[in-house]
Length: 94
Image (cartoon, rainbow, N blue to C red; front, top):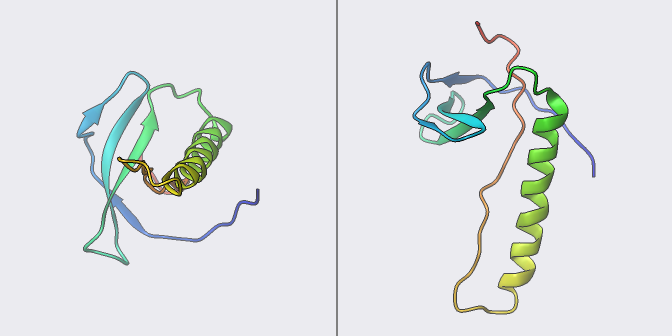
């Protein structure tokens, strides 16, 4: 129930590689970890503020917790959720 912050330097592709009904998806490279590839999902609505993104991250974490509990029951197929972070793009050109 507590947010923490870390500074990272990323490079985000200029064009999205995919599009859903609510968000655009971009490949992101964490420059400190060049062999790892991430995905940034950005709302199509400019009016969506930080709270919308925070709610999405919290929901993803909540689902991950329940998936872990489900997997402890040794189901025939396990459920996994991707790790999720909230990025604040401070030097993003428009």
